[in-house]
Length: 470
Image 1 (cartoon, rainbow, N blue to C red):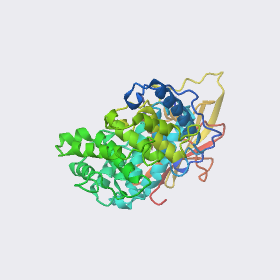
Image 2 (tube, rainbow, N blue to C red; image 1 turned 90 degrees about the vertical axis):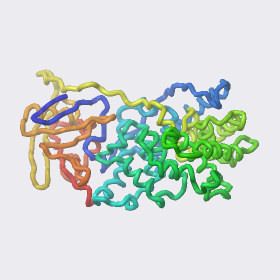
Image 3 (cartoon, rainbow, N blue to C red; image 1 turned 135 degrees about the horizontal axis):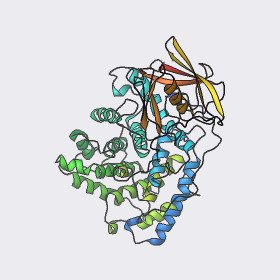
């Protein structure tokens, strides 16, 4: 650690992050292209319980193609098409637990910052209203759950997401009977909790068990829908029940296993002779995930036929678009949407402590200016760094040489998050965050303090901005 006039500075520069100062609220990335890892290691995935070596090779080959295809669909701003950023990231991580960690630093920064940015655009206006009910959040409970699972899969905290405990928000959703339009979304809500081993209320678990009808475990509002939505819902319910089973047993919730087994049998009874479920790719993939998560007896359904049918539904790894592929590919790695509770996601490696080196006479240097703007008060500083160093190192050098400048950052899984400057701190409750401008107040920085490399004569302006009015 560095201690500078009461300012705690955690150093980590290996992964240059866009996160840091909330300047990613105004994302304006200028990235020429995204690098997809050319080699995806084979996994030890016993498809259909194992004993099918040829099928396992086929599945892994398709898994590699699908991961590469889905990653290649990422847009230049870090998003995926049709509001599927969180689904794509979650699918990729479940299909390859080291996918994100294996990417280059810029792709890691771009991907995780975009994920955070999208969620914060919903949270900031809501957080600005003190004690606002969750129904005022312009994000459905089901989509919030999907964002939470994606955050968990990328080692980003969901219990302290820029001052917001997302699990507490989800608990509020789960308490309200009208927060979820169906049990597909409700099951995702349960999964977002149990995947982090967060305690789920007895009432929420009983609601998951009871579903649409306490007397009929297979009942669904889409029961007569031939497209397969009823099987999709049952599959998510099964995954959620498997994930939360230990908690249900501890709370002595009656008939949990009986209902779980009944729903498994309901799914199995819908399998067609060609191995599919409703001749629907997504429905079949979700059914496979559910039945394998519940460890359904291999003799009671045709797992191999289902998998072989699924493999024929893709072209070069594409199962029919980003949304479909993201939901389907977890099974290619023997995972499901409840697997994060048990799987160890590989997080990017971090450096222990990075300290700016002493400037030597032979070093090429750059000199630039820093301004700190709090309301109408502006403080100006000049700092010299070694050419090629990032803004974060420049701030460390400035704090070391000028006692009037202090700052604090906190360490995240992916880099430094700026908490305060000169004793003034961000305030999530009041929607106050530090942002960066370059050159003038109208030009937002495209990256955070670890992703910016100052040039000679540049001006960086730190502004404490109120987002409650945005």
